[in-house]
Image 1: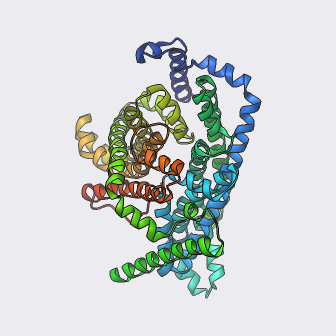
Image 2: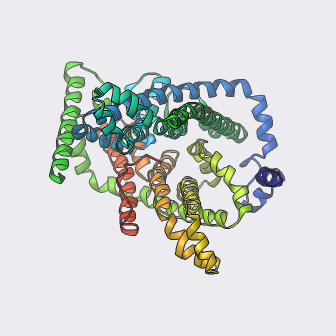
Image 3: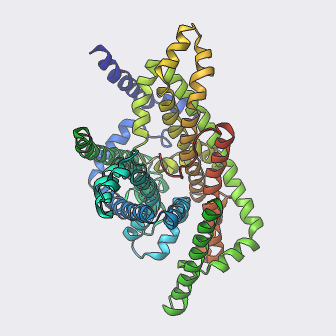
Length: 258
Length: 261
């Protein structure tokens, strides 16, 4: 009990101390900053409360774009992994191509998508789709192919047809990898959506809010938007982790029956 | 087998190049898209722009890349030190670990404009943001490396009454190196992206500035050449880490591709 309490109290105490030092302006003294350059926590909270409706609206725009792009990108990535599994000789090249596309920085991708799509939402989904393909393709491919020894031989000895092998052996085996990829992708998707909004023509979304408010020197609003983006990121991650726990519990229990 | 893999790769590259040219042709000639040159220019014109502008592009890329690399090394060092401290002291771990986990869920790059606004110096903020973004994956992965050291090995050293420095230099640090590289491989392309982002937020030089000017100036060939250059920078950063890994830990299996954690 004491140990558990310590695990909670130490980081909590550190966080509170950090915010207090920040609130008291010691960082400003240390880094030689004027109060308008770095707003203090209570000011950020006040601003956040005052602008909550608009900020939540912007948050909804960004999150829906990030989610739509993530679903699209992860689906494409998974399909590439499936094709690469079915045609090992030629399909593996597809994985390498997707990894290479993944190397294009988000900041370079955004202007390209600006050309391709008319609205900010389409552009955002386009960027997120491209940056979420690779993690899913690679992790799913690994799960579909790193089978436990002799499982494939067993399937062959049953004369199991291809679809059976796929749905009863490869797909369940890929599930943990798929969730790993989703957890990577949800963070990537939020970053990509926000960064793409820095450069989009649209006038909504968290990224636009951050950039626009900093341009207008409204630092506290900028920080409030960052806070919302972080909370949204953590919540989305936790939702996926929750689904993972549910889904893999089923997976593990299936396994222990054998 | 080796030549076979190369053959397959060659066919893929050729097919992609053909698809690009064909796509550009359809867009420009068959669809009469007035934006064809900006949506998807011919591959050969991008390549020729890349070659004729190789000098200025390489200069701009060099500026951005150098800052990214400095920040990357700085962030990796601090991240590694924090991981060591966390594995030595239970208290430090208790304090820092929750924040390390949360940091992997929040959109860190969103902070770039704020840091840029605070620091106001483009070189310093390029380095700072690249370091900041490198720090988390390196610290998290190295710590998981320290944690996965076999308990028996640790106990053996303890039974020799080995001091803390000996335990670290003989066991923990060598054992954690593959995990360190896993973190570095995630961080390297990210630090390049961060550096380019700061370019675009209002620097005077660097590949991001070139990209933005070409975009606003309507010079689509330069724009696409800059995009290709920045993509190459991302790949180069990854390959450099991969090469370093091959030299430092030649016994590790390097069969994994980028982007996986």
